[in-house]
Image (cartoon, rainbow, N blue to C red; front, top):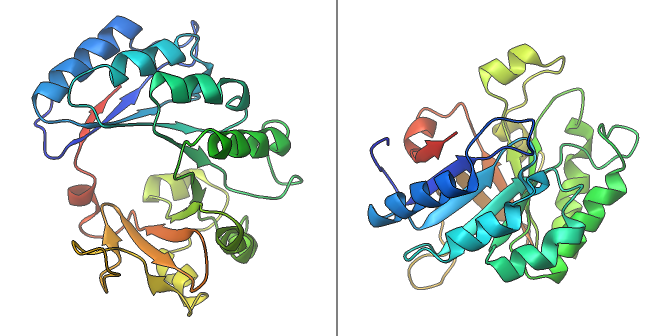
Length: 241
């Protein structure tokens, strides 16, 4: 196992029987060993981890491990609704949705209403804060920035604008858009990170994200600059595939 440089661990698990990857027993053993070395936060990722037939049992196994305080899942969200309550009861803390567009006409891979149902189910079952990852792509979703921002006035969501890496840009038919370009469109943003006394800090940095908020908004707006010089240092964690 790689040297532990912080307290977070990401585990990529298969969606189903036709996708190779770690099994339930292997995942449990890995997390048990990691917890002994100080890991307390586990993020489950993959093509669609919620489609794994044992996902509820996997979450329950991890939640029972001494030292684990936080378990999250990254998902496209389409299949979350029927399992949201079970996952919460199993010990899941929160959910991160990958949703690069809010427009049904642009959404690829089914009915975007199924994603909305998943987000609502996460909220209803206390899987908070609900985080929504938005990969910035000029020519695709740059005209939806304000639509995402508006969601933070209505809900306690964390909208996370994420830059493409050079590899992602090379594989995309759309152009790179930086976090700084988006910030320039949102001059009223204010840092939303709390200091040790619970007061708003002037430094927006929190882990890999810069966290901001509009005055009067319920949710937050985050920026993840993948091309920042210190990005690799900030993302240092154990990753198990």
